[in-house]
Image (cartoon, rainbow, N blue to C red; front, side):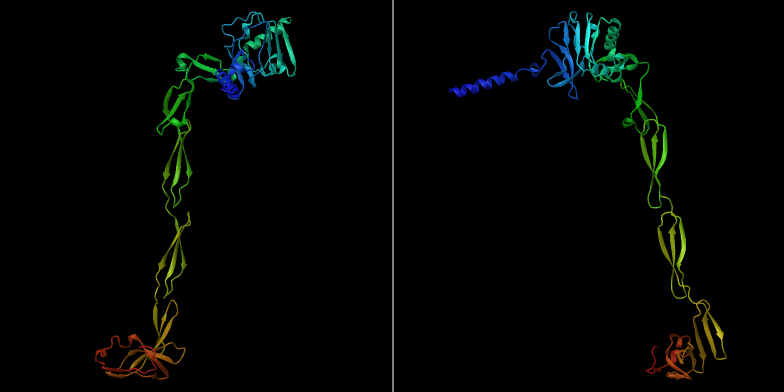
Amino acid sequence: MSKNKKIISVFLAIITMLTCFPISAFANNIDWEYSVNEDNTIKITGYNGNLSSTLELPKTIDDKTVIGTSSEIFENKSVDNVKTIIIPYTYQFIWNLDLFSNLKKIEAHSLTIQNMYLLNGRQENKYIELNSENTEKFEKSLAVLSKLNESLCENNKEINKEKTTDCKKDGINYICKVCGYEWKKACQEHQYEYVKEKSTKDNCYSECIACGEQIKSNHNYKSEITKAPTCTEEGTRTYTCTNCGYSYTEDIPKITHNYKTEITKAPTCTEDGTKTYTCKLCGDSYTEIIPATGHEYKKINIDDTTYKIECSKCGLNRFYKELDDWTITFSGNDNTCTLYKYNGSETILSLPEKVGKYKVLGLEKSAFENVKIADDITEVTIPYTYKKE
């Protein structure tokens, strides 16, 4: 094996050995055990070193900021020889300082004290010492430090539901979200809260926030029209429980149209009219035809042989003149006429081109209606000047 290959083999062996050790063994403070919080800060959970007269708590471990200690940090350890504790400014909570019965001095940054709500609200950002020589101040500070977490944990507590099975019988188990300390507190009654997501149409659903005890109760519904019905669309009525917030809806039927009628085109004697129906609520509309009224004629005699037929509604008129063989009809506006009715008895007819002063334009359909000899007429000669038969 060449020299270069030996070097590479040794290098790989070293790398393999290094990867077999836990990362914490190479941390900046190898005597400390810790856990990493969600915000990448550290809480110290144990100490593996030997305690001397001075205990300096670490400010950082593996480049992560230490913010406090857990309650089990010095379990099963003798701390009698510790006389001085140095606390970095980053700490927000410290547990079990009352274990250090021979403690004489606490060195801390005033920012730490501020963070811990201690020493009459000091605001200075400088280093301070609390010596046992000032017995009253030291004991007060030590007592406050010892009881610090009671306030901290109370403000950051949450129910440990895994350990709370029947809070009314066994009490409520709490855990501090910051430091992880756990404790139990007696409970006289279940602390029910409504759970909208589990409620049904028939019942409210409530659950004890501590132990999960479940009960059902009646809804207290309040109804509200959330969508008004129209003539063309259904509406919506919403029922909402004022207790749990559960809600459901019902359809409101469409309302009936309220139509207003209007004659938008009046009928005449000869033309249909229009009636329009418009809904006052939604504007929907439709139309109906009003049939033409038809003429209402009356006969007005002018002389012994002449009369006029005139519509009493529209004024349309026509003149008629009874002659020996024919009754003619004319408008009176000119000297033309048409043959209205045959009064004669001849069966071979030669229709006239002119009757009196009137030029004959044609033959009305009524010319031979109800004429007794109509069936006997054998021949009819029509002048070329006629425009219609």
